Image (cartoon, rainbow, N blue to C red; front, side, top):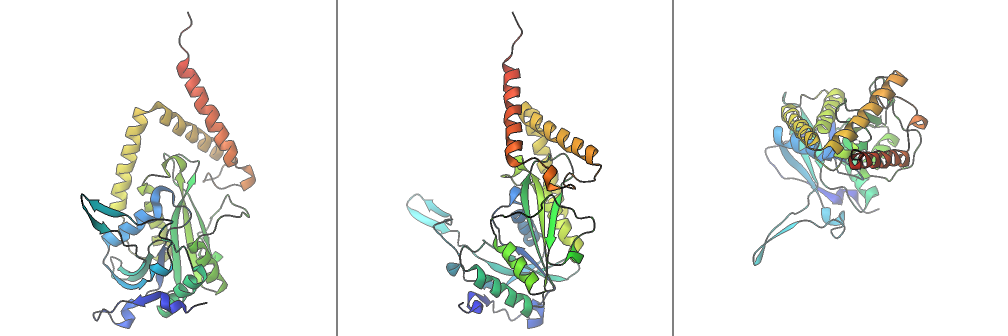
Length: 312
């Protein structure tokens, strides 16, 4: 393996002493295989826009990214190239409302050199006295937005998981992500790491869904004790709900799908007598194919009913 320390460099800022760069919490926001509702991106933007921050280190993205796989945006203005969205992977020092610092590693997920990048991040974690690494992202679920959002938590130390945490997942094989690999390696090294997968209604998976980012922020606050501002996310979540309600009023098809999910959700809770839709065994949940078949049949029935007129 090439030297991992050559992947990053610290910023030269005379106003910060070496001790000022240390923090006990690292929030990881490097994208991944899936981020329904743009949960991680919305949360990351909120943290940087609403809290004092500065960049303390940067990574050499030329060694890590496949530019042709996800081409950076450029702006062409009539007869010349105006700008280029230069990708960056940065380590931020962020300060909460009480003046307590934490670290935020944000940018695109590396395409290459995962093992070397993991080692580089672990070097920074050790050097900067990080005790806990936290990751938040969204996953699509067949749940309605009109019911409380759930989440699946996972981590390297069972004592860190919230009491009563239950999951629908047994042993499954999924495509890997850099954040997942880092969590695995941190656990093998005896270090604490936590992840929260917020359950985003699948029909909102491609849209910004601030409610999911708000829940993610609340989970970060709960496990770290940081005093983070949630005002902006709460306001955005309210606007999102109002827009969704408006669209439901304009589309009977959307309303019907949501009502079907509500009925499924409520019936499931009543039958299981659990607080959460996901507090059950994986074997009791319908498969993705079964859910898809149910929706296809449901939408066909809706179309057939709409096409039936009064008999002559």
